[in-house]
Length: 265
Image 1 (tube, rainbow, N blue to C red):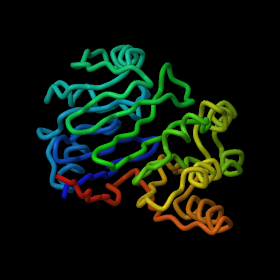
Image 2: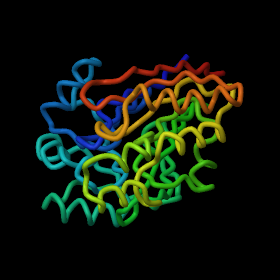
Image 3: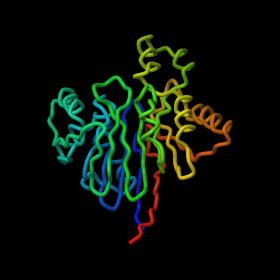
């Protein structure tokens, strides 16, 4: 018996950080919150930064790399990114972490996991989402994308755990007080996924093995947990589908998924 753990520590425009643990490795996906906040949330799940083996970065926006400089300076944890994102990190933070460069689209090993970074549509130089696999267990992480391409849906199939963006309700974006440039960016194909777009992904990739879905990166102004669940569950119910869905929160840790995989000797 072996475990696969996943816990969002922060999800949203104020910072994004996800925790993944298997028997062979402990790592973070993005570090968009400050080091003290990160240490506090890791402590809640019984983990310290000293135990973290690696940090994977999806893209160089501040809400995904804000804490990286301080964390690297204190702990020297290896940072996995593609070359263009690495350049963006150096430009934004003025530090040069211990980079492990991966190539978008090519799987690589991290401990006992196989990581596959794949291209998404977002307004940065080379943004990626990830799938993480170990002994038949598969996690899919896809947020900060304006449009779910066929490639994205292909990679998110057959997952046991899915972390998928449900950023906004389009009518709420149009009605909010933000500038027009903000609204156009969010609603564009390189912006963020709406509740309906998230629901369409789930309708496409849902299967009987899918145990847990996280709705990620909810806008505090242009969405709410209640609205996201209403829209997405409504879409699923029309197709006679029911999934175990929870919210990935901004200001607190979220539900911790733990899947046990039976290993045949």
